Image 1 (cartoon, rainbow, N blue to C red):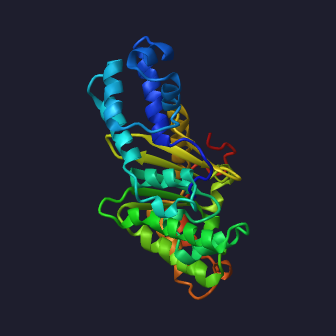
Image 2: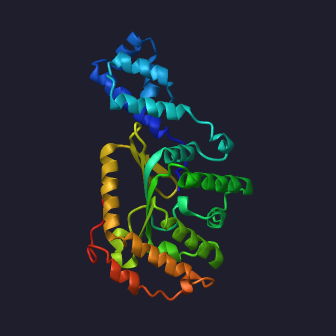
Image 3: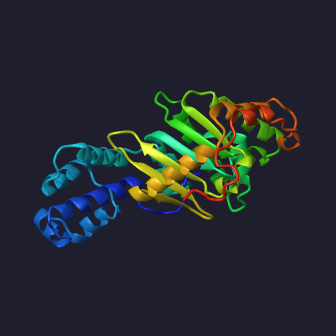
Length: 315
């Protein structure tokens, strides 16, 4: 699910962090830089903390001032600045969707690779309208108008999956997600059919973690790894917490989350076996998933999870 709450844009944080490093590499304090560049300390401080945007031309001037040479870093920062200032699609959602959620959608749109782990619900990019509506209806604090905006936003996010240049989407789902009935049997089986359909797409890679994999693979919090297209190459991790989601763009922390994702993949069924399980459930219509007798021998024999019985967990 996209993050909620107010926080600086990931792109602006990355630009600000790079500018701070460039200033320090040039040997200037923030006071010295402001005096020589002709800007206030408050302006540069908020810029370095990712609290306001910067036009590409002014960013170019500032990079020249710090002596940052042409190269990948410069290209990446200018690309991020252009993407930050090139919005417009978000206007229909203003006042209904948080700035953080809009930032999340913007990052999705610019991603070449999306890696998602979900333990309780179907990933947002795979949800049907009815499944998403049933989820939002559980949030009693939401008004009908806001629920409608959330649904439109969820469906709008999914357009990247059928666009001309869709991202590669690696979806790791706990098996229990398929048996958590949301919205009733018909809604749930429609959702299972949707998962099966998307799992056949060449850019979607479905991996299901079976219950036999052990608890150590199931206790990791849901999260998403978003890798942006070059030249704005950047990988961001978005962690799901109880009442909010948190952006993580620290390179060392992101690397840890990437290693944890690899461990999840090691314990998951392969793509063929994952699709076979979903297709088996989809073929049971109109029965309820929780009443389906699961003949798992076919896919279980094809791919047993590695590390079964171990007690460690991803870090």
